[in-house]
Length: 273
Image 1 (cartoon, rainbow, N blue to C red):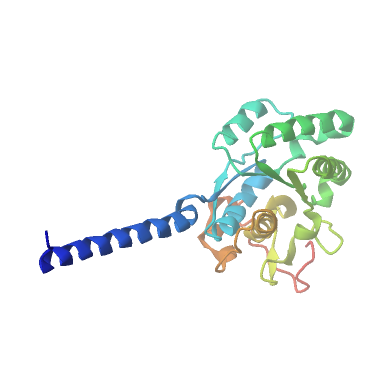
Image 2: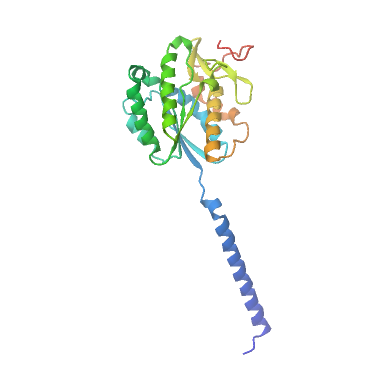
């Protein structure tokens, strides 16, 4: 039977549509991994009240990349030897994070000084638990403390154990915080250059005295440090915009105590005050 011109045109049209469909499928297969095969990097933060102050800055820095989602779990009183810590860790890890950011130690200083060897064993147990499902740990050292608190020697002992932990575990990155939040020598300072180089208040004032807790300027510096680790290890993009000046800086925690983050920056810009 001889095909009519109409039948030929119909057949040609069908063939073109079929070819187009095949090409579309091939194109989708090629790009599908980039569309649905990647997910945002999941990060959880754990730690004590100093970390609680750092959390908004860490979240702002990481989520400004567009590739990271942050779950903040820090609360006051967290220590690796405190009651309820195992349940706290289980809850924090429930979302199967890719990265766990840790900063603590202040609540464990007595035990650390009394028996650093035993605390090192505890750290090893915790590192095993945090990384057993493939997470990478970013362990922030305890920041410098006000001289009036008299705990600098104990803090250095703790930070030495945290650094040793990272040396032993490939899935743990240790971040030294003295140069980030302190003066040029890594000692306590109320003021220092912030993310953009301008002088900022990094630590709170309480009852007219220096306090170890953080202001937005300090939180943003820690956020930048964590972001640098994720850029290096996971290839996340850099943060966009002036994230360190976002609405998060007005969080009520930075007004506890009232006016605690409103000290006048000295002319030198980096004096402890």
